[in-house]
Image 1 (cartoon, one colour):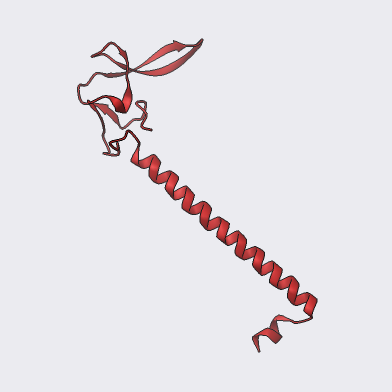
Image 2: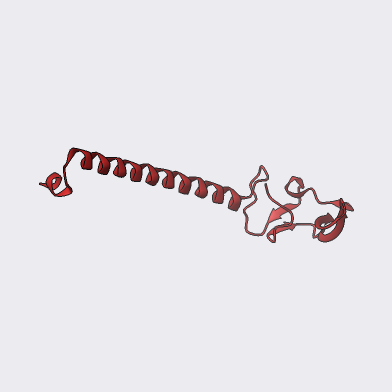
Amino acid sequence: MCNPLCPFFRCSRGALVIRRMNVKGKMQLVPFCTWVGDVCIGPKCQYAYCARRALLPDGRCLFAARAREKQGVEDFEKEIEKELEEERKAAMIARKKLGRGLEEELL
């Protein structure tokens, strides 16, 4: 989900201000809409846009979606490499038990 605290998040009305507010006893940065006079609703607002054009119509950030997708692909590749390595180890153990060396297999 797109976050109004992102440096690329913009308000076309120019009403977005980041304020420090006391929230549940802690000082936190809060996006504040000076036009409405309340906390910014983020990507749900009709005036919200992304300076990098990464705000999708459903409110998700394209950069975050791509990062998650890339991470998923990398995890899948790591899993495949791990399985291949396990198969190599199992084959090596089987060769040792049968008494065959690598040289005999290549001939």
